[in-house]
Image (tube, rainbow, N blue to C red):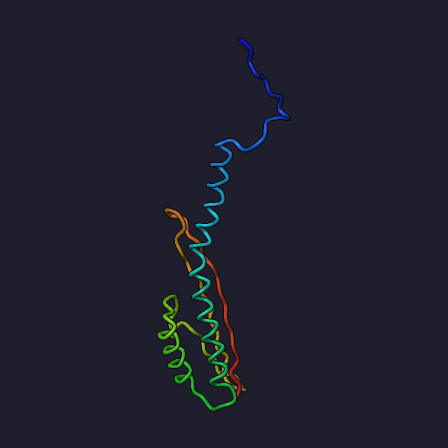
Length: 127
């Protein structure tokens, strides 16, 4: 009985185990992306709210209460859940107000492993 021997140079392709390891590796990154996309989409809503705030209140007389109410309404309309208008720092300056927020959005990944993403937004409202 003759055995067919192939040289290592003639063998090509990926083993099933190699393919499985590659799929697990790629699947892990895909799942991480799926978990992180909503976090970044919510941050885009917050950034848009700060941009609208700058357009609405720059160049006019405004108060801290008006700014906070406007932020609260915008966060409600945009369905922002990670922060509230009370989390936003509003400081009075010589030229108007500095409005800023530093926050961390934490989202679960696997079991007790979480992603914690830090964000920061600032805008100066000048009279």
